[in-house]
Length: 267
Image (cartoon, rainbow, N blue to C red; front, side, top):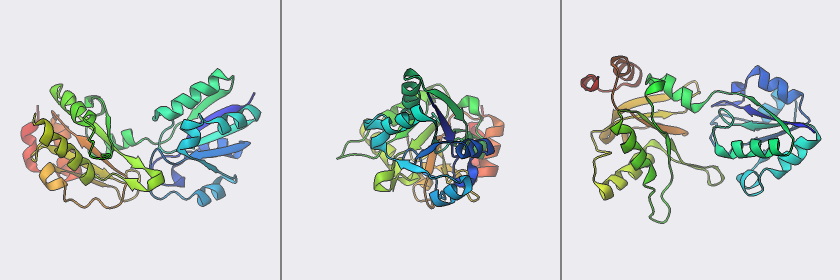
């Protein structure tokens, strides 16, 4: 029986992969990559193949979800197989499911970790990691339907004084990537329906674009100003801070250009 190794690609381009990850790929009998769960804005598969000296086969959402990763598991039964994943492996439940299936079929699995958007957001914003509540994804509205879940999660976290990390929807097969503006407008539309003051024009929010690149944008301001702020190309991500430690407030002012007035939020 072979082996399936999940290797994290990191956040921006092929240079983000770890040296250990490169070694594992060079020793592999087959290498697959999925690129639909996150956007790596400067990744080149051709440059990656040149770096590792191996052919990389791209697998779609259909292969991993509808076909339950069958082609990957069949290859892993024959020899050492690598699945390349944006960010840190197993953040997405799709990959957890594949690992469980592999182990159940007697295939040994291992993980080579990579940079995660979660730790990147914490580092770039200066908001302390132990003060985050449940994270949530803001999906694109479909046929007029807007998911209430993100709105509800932000509200629940705020009741406990916790920050909320909001992932923004990615439809890689359609080349659609939700922006900070899209995410905020979706939440404001839900606020208009619910009217329980979870999101308002004066709500403090942090937007981050292209974390892991040489030129990330990190901006903190009130919603009324953020909907028109130019974050540039995706990927984007949102954080709704709640109660602030004095160092968090200073970090947002210094590192993200937040209004000086947020010092009044320190508790």
